Image 1 (tube, rainbow, N blue to C red):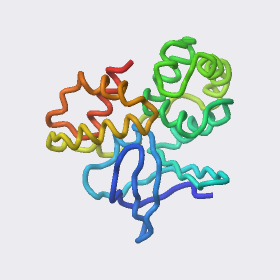
Image 2: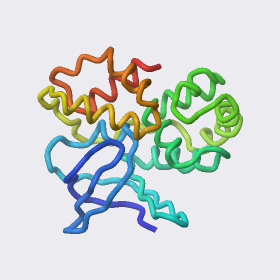
Image 3: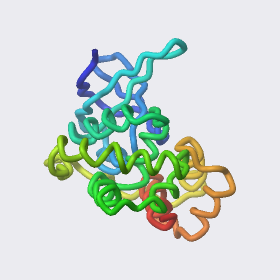
Image 4: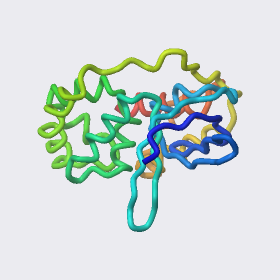
Length: 201
């Protein structure tokens, strides 16, 4: 099992990134919460990983903190929640927000996330209450992690954000609607996605 990787991000297209670890490139899927704290330059990063082995693929997921990885693993135990839906949850709301949503029993907030219907939302609320208590309090962002600096605004950043939202499970029309209210000037792709997800709730 691969539990941790340290290297340099050589390519990023949310939710995918390519991490160079001593000349070996690892293809990793990560939630937006991880992309938000990746450095803009090629500084080394440490990702806590989860390897999912399926009949048709081996998928490596990466997280900025062990807490996010722990939450991801607990989400996978819920019936009807796979890797894609778990990534969408961690991309659409922070661990703090998810915990508050579960405690409040807010079905509506959960169903606004892609891939989650009413039954899955209700199941999440029932099953995750106890699991969140076992995980303990929500951990802060890892210390010493640099937030990416804004890149020059470009149509490609908006296009990349649109592609990323669709990869997270949003339908094309919904992703376009979410981006319509975002002023992307001076923002990086990750910042555009963050603004779209916040506006979509």
